[in-house]
Length: 146
Image 1 (cartoon, rainbow, N blue to C red):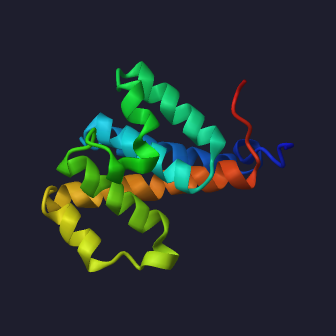
Image 2: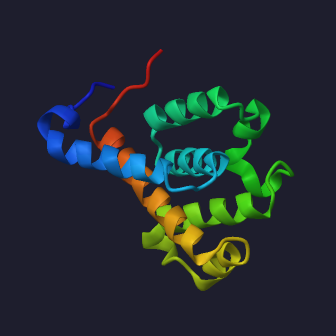
């Protein structure tokens, strides 16, 4: 696979705007562990090897359990994930696959049962942000380091 383009160089203002949005998400007050899970799961769904690599390395550096990270793709089958994790991961899948899911009420009710409205808003923006990054990396054929 060959890189197609460097969006950071071709559209620097837009790239920096996405980076600022990502910074705002990181400082929003959402739990860092949840952000790692959301970023990793969306990146897995979107087939973004570059982002999966980054998010696994970042999560490990922040002390997340490697065994748990191996199981994010099959979170429904693993006891590693509590009710908040499960709601966040379900919401991540629902919004990442929104053309297929339509963000169903059942997923919203699940997330609403364990998050405040403000947290849901923050989580929704976090999910949207990682989806932007995934689309930038996948479309430009960004390659993770070896």
